[in-house]
Image 1 (tube, rainbow, N blue to C red):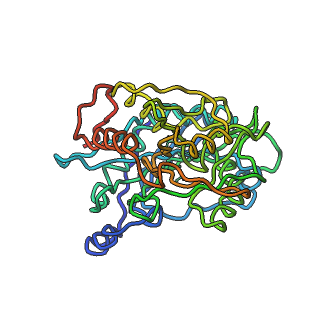
Image 2: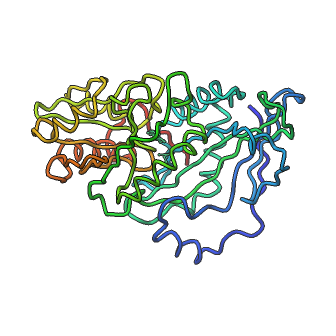
Length: 361
Ligand code: PLP
Ligand code: COI
């Protein structure tokens, strides 16, 4: 594998300043002292020049092709401080593989899995003092790659930067774990068949922002997208996958049709629920059915899951025709059991039968 040059920052954040900031980090506002940068240059044969360095602005030519055609992908993953003081990543191999799948869709080069994981490990190691002290806190890692070639022709670029930054985080939603409110977008689609919905590319999020802004204007926390072709089926939230829990204990989550992001939390929840003896089906679920089942009581719980939000109950769903509540707008027992199973495994407090906890140091 490509060797890393390690250049610790000459001006680290003073410990007192850092520790004060770590008491209430919020989400995605605070950043550590370092970043990892690896360059790709087709003319030089691929990946070159891997560096752990001071976090700093990236000089950008105004003709860098990402600024025009948005050839960009990213990942989101967390490192946890375990009870014994060590640090661990959760399923980094799955993030590395999804990064490759996103790269394929966006006509970008693959970052080899060992280079991806090493980049993240390097950052967790050098910034190990940046884990938040709050309950539920973690070091959120954001690996991303973009077309850095200075060229305005429309074709896959020949030069890229693969960068990883880290952000100490607390909860994604303010509200202390209360169920969130979801806005069902009628006007906007997230992803169409044959599009980029299954890739974690910045463009998907750019396209979701107007719908998210509509949700916020309606007093909702998140937007839920329906399938673009028929506007019948529930797909996912702007940044989370969805699960539905019924009165017979069974669970449904929408299938990976190519328009939904294949969440690593989603995959983990399916496995953990089955480990707990629950029945989980990957099956389309219609928006109208969701409303009917919530109103009849056949649907007991709905929850959203993702790296940033972990497992969060959905209490109310609004659309232009009205709103409905699920399970009396309370967080339910299946959601709580699955959240607890996932979080205790991620934090090293439960057995790890699937080998998901990847110790760093
Ligand atoms: N769906 C979307 C659109 C997302 O942005 C995310 C977050 O990464 C997820 C689902 C959940 O994916 P994961 O569990 O891998 O974080
Ligand atoms: C994540 O959960 O990692 C995401 O990328 C979602 C985003 C809403 C922060």
